[in-house]
Structure formats: C-alpha cells, structure tokens
Image: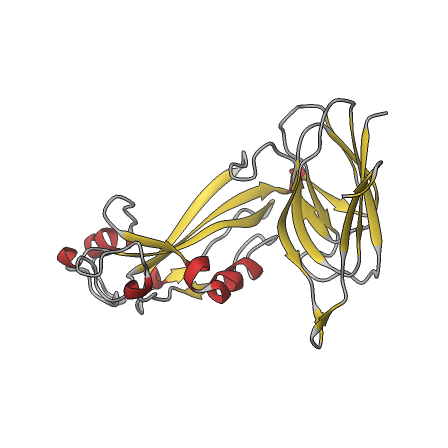
Length: 251
C-alpha cells in the first residue's frame, strides 16, 4: 500500500510543496504545494528584476511571468555600490543607460547586499503577498535601507543608504499545478515536482474545513514544504489550524 499522509486545513491560505513519487487525490484545500528533494533549488525558470531607488522608469520592481505561469518570490535583496563608484543617491528619470547599468546592476563581489527580510520583515512580506501565486506582481517602487544597520557592510566603504533593490523569483508553469477540489495528480519520477494549489488561491477559501491525501510507494518518502501559509486573525486570536498526520498518527 505504501505511506499515506493526510492534511487537514481549517480556513487558511497556504502555499506548500512535497517530495518524491506521489499520488494526490481527493479533497478541497486552498493551498499551493510542491514536490521536490530540495526546496532551495526548484527546477523552474528563475528570473531577477532589479530597480534603482529614484524617480525614473528604472525605479520600479515590475516582476512578471507568462500568462501560463505563477510567480513564487525567492529573495528580495537591497544593495549599495561602493562610495567610490560615484553612483547618485537617487536615480533620475533621464539618467543615461551607462549610469543605470553601472549603479543598478548587482555585483555580489563588490556591493554591500542584505536580505530585506532580515532588516525590514514587513517590506519583504508585502512583496511576497502581492506576488505569490500570480502571473505578475503589483508594480512597486524600490525603497532604500540604512547601510549603517547592515552588520555585514563596512560603513567606511559604502554610502549611508542602499542604491538598488532586486527580486529573484520562480515562474511555475500552470501545467505543473493541481488545483483542488478536482485533483488527481500522479508522478512516477523520484525527485520531480508536484504543486498543489487551492482553487481560490491566493484568495482565502470559503470552506471552513478540508482534507487531502498524499500517497507514495513503500520505502519511499514524502517531504512537505510550506511556501506560503497565511492565517487570518479574528481580532487577536488565530482560530485556523493545519494538521499533518500519517498512518501512525499526528506528525
């Protein structure tokens, strides 16, 4: 028979992913799952969009995939060029292409770079929430971070604030995504991907409780990764839960 894993979700928005040979069947769940051996490296098209702080057309993060793909943000990074580069604190709308290329294109060897999530969690969350599961992100202007607060950067080498922001993201084909409640996905290739997404994702589900079952062959295993899990608060209390269980009981 193999291993069977059941998931019970109550009123939630979530994005997750799984591993190994899997059969997914039955259930209604507002979630996005993926099957793979390593969450850090999905075998999907990866894109980087960079924007400089300022008031020009190059000052907006405008991430998008094709109409047949879904966005999953990987990382949002702020960066500063060395003071010796002569890059302006703000990029003007009429800046020459050579200046934009020199000041807005990341160089991990020379630049001061930091993950936005570490220093401005809400800023990173806003990008995630307006991008994940969509074909395009809401267009947003690049913001700056205080270099003095970035502990990995030498403030004597860099200016007081960052110059640019970049977003790395995956474009996940619709053809790889199964949507509840009409899901019956099978994958016989070890280490390949299966994504599961709720029919209303990324909007919240209108169903109060739902379940799904995942099954694999004997001596195989299932890895589940939460890519985007969003619970709503009722005033100050979170009344939603997600329960994972196998044949031996709750995990």
